[in-house]
Amino acid sequence: MRKLLCLFLLCLGACAEQQQADVNLFFTSDIEGVFWSRPEPLYGNEEIGGLAVLKSFLDKQTTPFVLLDGGNWFSQTPEGNLTKGDYFNNVSSSLPYSGRLFTEKDLVYGWGSLSHIIKGSSAPFILSNVALSSGKIPAGVRSWLMEDVQGIKIGIFGLVPQKSLRGKQRLGGLKISDEIEAARHSVALLKEKGAQVIVLLSALGASNEQDALTDAVLAEEVSGIDVIISSNLGREGAESHQIGKTLIVYPGSKLDSVAQVGLFLNKNKELTKVKFQDIVLYRRDFGMDSYVAELTEEVRRTARNQMDRPVGKLEEVLTGNLEGESSLGNWAADCLRKWAKTDVAIVNADSLRKDMPAGTVTQYDLYQLYPYADHVTLLTMKGDSLLNALEEGLNTTGHFAQISGLQVRYSSSALPGKRIVGAWVKGNPISLKNTYRVAVTDYMLSGGAGHDGFIDSLEFKNTQVEMRTVLRLCLAGKNTEKAHILNRWRAVK
Image 1 (cartoon, rainbow, N blue to C red):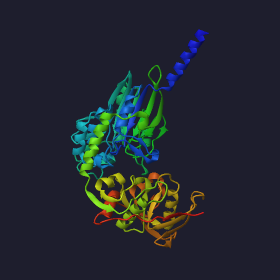
Image 2: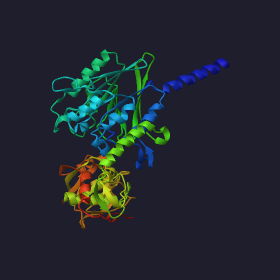
Image 3: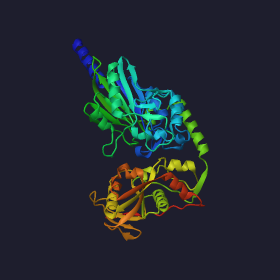
Image 4: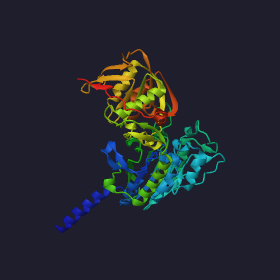
C-alpha cells in the first residue's frame, strides 16, 4: 500500500512538473514612456504596470527566465520624450534584461541620439540587419545572442524593417539590410552554434498594406523560427497566433502587462511546446520594488518641473466617460473641429486619459490628458460611410466616439448596424450621397479601438500635427475655456 502511495505521489509530481515550463521568456514592448504604476480605468482603476512592479514580479519567479525588450520605449509621454528615451537606461538598469531592440519610433531624434542610448544600455541591442554605412556593427550592438539557461541554448536575433529609414532625417550613417535574407542567415548561424530554441525580436509588426513584410509573412518565408516576439504595434491587448511551427506573439503596450512565453523541452532538450500568456502587472499581487520606484519618480519629477508652463485656464471641471458622451470629450472634439475647419470632428474617448480640473492648465496636464502622439487626419467621406463609421463606434467598449458638428439619435436595444435612428450635421440630416469633411486622428483612421469605418473615405490627409498640439492651441490666448453642453448623443426607445 505504501509503495502504491509513493508511486501515486511521484506521478502527481511528474504531472505537475509537466505543467511548468523549463524556461520562460518575458517580454516588454511599446512601453511608450508609460513606465510607472498607475490606476487604469480599463482594469477597474486598479493600480497596475510600471517597471517597479515588473521588477518585483521578476524577483518572485522560480522558473529560469530570459527578459527581453522590443523597443518603442519613449514615444508618448513627456517623461520619455524629454529624455529622448534615455530614462530607460537609468530606470531599467536593475532589471535583468538580456537584450533589446529598437523600432522606427525610436529613430525620431536621429541616429546620434539613438546610438548614445545603445552605448549606454546595460543590455545589448540585438540587431541582425542593422549596420553603419561603413559596414561596421555599431557599439553596443550584437548581431545575435545565445542565452544558455541551465543547459538550454536559446538563440536570439533581431530585425528592424528597412522602411524605418524612409523620410527620416539624420540617419545617413545607418544601413538596414533585407529582412528575409538576414533572418535566413541568422537562423542557420544559430542552429550551427547549437541553439535548441530560436527566438526573433521583430519590429516588423502587422500591416494592412498590400504586400507589406509582416511577422506572418516572414514566418511563412523563413523556417526554423520557434517564436517571433513582435513590437512597434502599440496594441492595447496582447494577442498570439501560429504560422506553421512558429508562434507569433503581439504583446500589449504601456507596460500594463508582461508577455510570457513558456518553453517546454523533452529529456533530449528538444522543444516540444510553447505556451503564451499575458500577465497583468497588478501592484496588489506583485508589490513594487522601492529602488526602481524611486528612480521612476525622479524622472517624472524632473519632467514635471520642465512642463509646468501654463497654457490656459478652464472655467469648469471637464470629466470624461469611456462609455458615453462627456464634457471632456465634447470640448476636445470642438477644439479639433475648430482647428481643422471641418464639418465634423470625432475623438476616441479612451484617448482622453485624465479628467481636467477647473483652473490653470499646464503643458504637463495636456500630456496627462492626451499621452499619445496621434496626428490629426482630414477625411472626405460620403454620408453613408460616415454613418457606418458611427455605427461601428457604437459596437466598441470603452471607446465611445466623442463628436462635434454632429447630433445623433440611437437605440441601444437595436441590432448592431441598425442602432442609429437619425443623425444631423449642422442641423441638417446626413445625406447618404453628400460628402462631408471630417477630422479624426490617424489612430482612429487605422481602425484603432474598433473604429474601423473611417478607412472607407474618399480622401484623407495626415496633417502631421499632434492632437495634443491642437488642444494646447485651443487653450492658448484665452482667459478661460468653458465646458461644452451634452446631448449630442441621445438614446431613444
